[in-house]
Image (cartoon, one colour):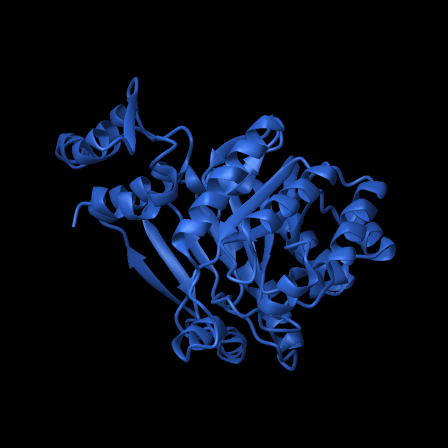
Amino acid sequence: MSGIYLHIPFCRKACHYCDFHFSTSTKSYADVLASMKAELRYWAPAWEAKVQTIYFGGGTPSMLNEQDLRELLDIIRSEFDVEQGAEITLEANPEDISGERLSAWKEAGVNRLSIGVQSFFDDELEWMNRNHKASKSIESVRLAQKHGIDNITIDLIYGVPASSMERWKENVKMALELEVPHISAYALTVEPKTALAHSVKVGKVTEPSEGEAHAQFVYLRSALNEAGFEAYEISNYGKPGWHSVHNSNYWNGVPYLGIGPGAHSFDGDIRRWNIRNNVKYARAIQNSVNWFEIEQLSVRDRYNEFVMTGVRRSAGISLEEVRVRFGEEYSAHLQSEAERYIENGWLAWNGDRLCLTSDGLFFADGIAADLFLV
């Protein structure tokens, strides 16, 4: 099994917190899309794994015109071995969602929508430099449901300095009232070279409070658990049967092919990443010049990646799987490094599996880094 990720590197506005690759200029749109189609055809002959998922991320994939979306999917279906009923996800901003576009997306084959809600408060959306109002988020979710798209996930952000615990509870309440089967929630982080980082540096904005973010995280997990959601990964919550197949495969080390500027690929042995520049990416493909870099992954690299994704999953890390995949040295290292976190109650053994406890969940990334072999 495998997945295909298509990076659509265009946005109408730059969200203050975002460090993904994107451009607010669409001058290179036609060249980038033509090059993405060419890139798909380039990799197809060598990509033998059956494609189980297709994911349009960004940027803002809902800025794609309907013809380009159809053509990209038609190329994938004709050039790759695509599983019947494959999960096809499109990330969409609320302001791009209309009845006409929903019908076109469905007709093209999209069967899962990821809607960038972020908050149900207009002033918080303005603080983030989002391009929509809260009312449009509610309208867009209900419109998608009306058009027969049941597999919907919405994104929320917690730890926002402009927010509060009471507001966060309202955000969660509204998300549940929309009756979507999946919710992704991310802590606001200050990434280098973003507008938010600059605002924090010059004192215009208060740095997000880790204590407040932790309290909101704890509340979220409790509320969603009570509502029947399964926390199958630290930032992802789904009703039974509604987990993201694409993201689950990524966390489980399933190969994926990345298409577009800045997209990454992984086949189990190598990691490849494309140029993070729209014009240079398109020009390189047009001129048949390398548009990507490749890293051959060592056993240590693969172990560290396995730990990084495994710690974040509710299933945790299987010690036997570590032993089989990487050898006794890595199994012993994992047990040794985990001991201090077991003693302080942040990690625990569940049979053969090393899992985060409820106290350790919020600190997953730091714990994972300490379990690495460096």
